[in-house]
Length: 205
Image (cartoon, rainbow, N blue to C red; front, side, top):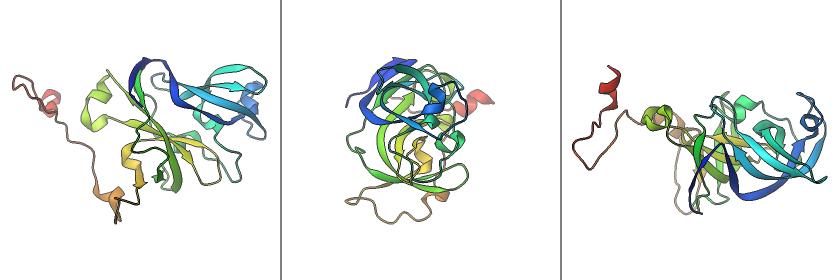
């Protein structure tokens, strides 16, 4: 799947049949007691807010800006997670790309949440912000892998690289301690042209 550049809204690489918390469709902030079947087909990025999605319900109503934690990819059989466990960081900007990496297609993984829980999940697609200060600065860059949790919550998560360990049976071997040993990227960029300043730390001194 090729990556495309978007502002505010984009189609998901493939639509997903799922469920939406019926409370938010009926004017309630907190509910979670009943769900309406829906198709999830679009994603929205607004700076300093969580990811939101566009859906179509079985009744034929189309809704925009349904927050991440109000959606399910399957009917929940266990407790749900609060929004800040599903997405660690708010959106960095209006502009972003959406990509479904073929290599990661439906790949299983484990996610370490903000509170330290380790959750089973599988890959849906990746959203990566562009053209803003955080995304351009290597230590602050965060892409969002959109994952379908497999822990009984039925929820969808958006997590960065440093909170995920992937399960590729043909390649991945021992990964004990990977969450504690890896660090963020250094504040450096690389250029073929020597006239560019590649030391971003120097700009902050």
